[in-house]
Image 1 (cartoon, rainbow, N blue to C red):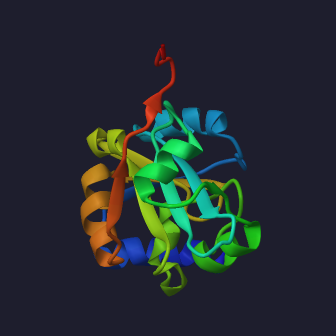
Image 2 (cartoon, rainbow, N blue to C red):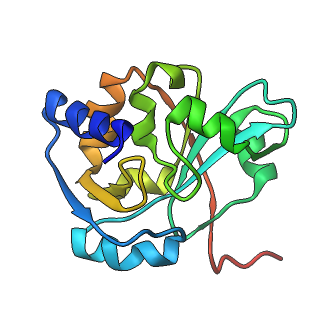
Length: 172
């Protein structure tokens, strides 16, 4: 277990958040997470670590797995110039994780204080959310209200809601 992963579990315990964890084989795609989410009884959001070209700001977008990421729409709603995937070194420096394990649980670190959080509005209706504890060999499930209430309040992290298209939406 890495130091970052230990810090996640310690933080959840200290804040009194009830969670269930599951160790599993390394996963790197959302499709690989679906059986894990089913076992834990929750939804695994797609987590995107983003920045504009000049990397003047960093954003973490939590999207419902059935939503479509359209950079122009998310950028407009965030009030940012065109967002793209941020570099791996920034991900490690700010959220203490790596590609394939991007997680809002990394917001607990002081280094993430300036990372802006964007949340797909559809996630607010999910009873249970499942995240990696900064390593993609484990998953942690918690009630959505604990994440949006207790966790984000404890890390002093406001969020901006975004409306994302759902897969299968028809456009004229």
